[in-house]
Image (cartoon, rainbow, N blue to C red; front, side):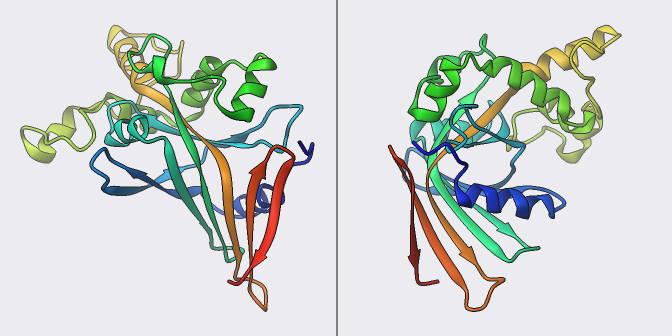
Length: 231
């Protein structure tokens, strides 16, 4: 396995550095075979120290959302990044893992050794719970408060009026002072989960160059295999 980061990841990282927010679209399939797509934010890339060629995409989710059920039913997903500044598109397909609190009922679905990247991180002693809590604290207080709302997609009894009762901000872990603040933090962190995508194939289109270029990448035991294709 190559020790270098794949070219697509290096290019994507550089492109995202010029963007205000690392937004991508995530496509999943429900148990009935119907596709669903939504926008997510890539919080960071994680790779084993000894294998930078195995990057993982890290996003976040609420354990109560439909996409969690969909991913647990069918872990294969596809994401799309469109980087406006560089006029580049990245279609990344692979497997998704949902990593909730160890105390959560869904935690047993998480396979910490699934695939070479997860296995290598486990061998290095990587702590996913510590990373989950770190990412939670990194989010803004208003964002953390979204995990205290009713189930996403459910219908509130009084329409938008109910939203006035939802907390507007939630403290970082360990910073709550009142009982209510502590309750909000406990509720939010219990529902908060990492959404980690393990890429296997990438379709990289460069529209900012003339002539346009398109390259596919496929992960193998020996590294990433590149192939030039027609845009």
